[in-house]
Image 1 (cartoon, rainbow, N blue to C red):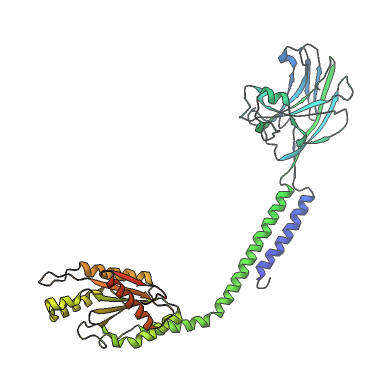
Image 2 (spheres, rainbow, N blue to C red):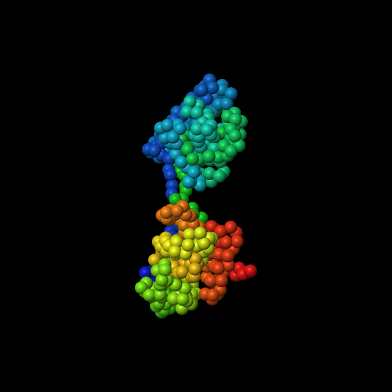
Length: 441
């Protein structure tokens, strides 16, 4: 943890405290939530066997403390029953999402002629893939049956204990992926008499109906806290690396100053005095004046690991030009050729007449690919140029290109000369490249 500044240490202390407080809050029940169904937030109604031509009579009394359903079941309908229907919303297709709750608490007193008789609890879910607003039976039956007895108080059941009724799945032809329990859109809760009843008096008193859940699960809280720790650790690593990089940067300043000094010397070595050391005919540098410079620039290039290339140029069939038009005309061609090529070179390039009709371009800070581009521009310009002589005249040149590797300037020149010789043997008016460590044959 070395190198951490004060604010980052405070951040870690805060995160530790936040983790302790958050998990303690969860363990003490701070994340728990409840949803109690009351006459203020829902609507109560009666459903009985009258829709099946039954003769059951029912009454419903709603007070602030409880809801009481009394019914006299008559064995006229095929399945006599009565139930309390609790509508959580005004629309059957817009329900209440109970998927974040994990259990339900029921406080029901049940009066029936049979001891230990069960009642049925239905959580009815609407889903447009299988439900129809015109058919209440199309809402999914998430059901449990249990014996409430009388004065048993609040009994809590996990929502995972509810099961979808098999007859409803078969009757509505529900696919397998929709046949499991579902609580994301509960619009109606039904509390009904048992499956097997007889003609008698029944009473269902609903004292309390409440759903229990948590705002955040324990696993989600742990994941969130873990994420906060990971983010903090990442910040610590990044800051530590930044501090280390600053130290490295400081330690490299001395060597950088030395490299800058070498660079200054290197750039100064590129400056020539153009009024001296020039070829008397073409007015460009001659071979003898660049030898000492070339040795120094090659050494500086290798020390600073800077690319350095050269282009060897030879005029094609120049002897025939002299033989056909005379040496005076040949000199004019050399002058115009040198002026043309010099116009194509860059400020940093060094253009030299090597001897006769041979020329060399030294290209500091230039790799092979750029040097080839320069050579191709020269070759195409010379081939297509209108030279302006009285007689029809055309000229081409061959070029050899080499890039400096771990070698002397003499070896570099030999490789470029070898590439030029190859270009001439291959038909002239072309460029050949001498690659690193190429055999000279």
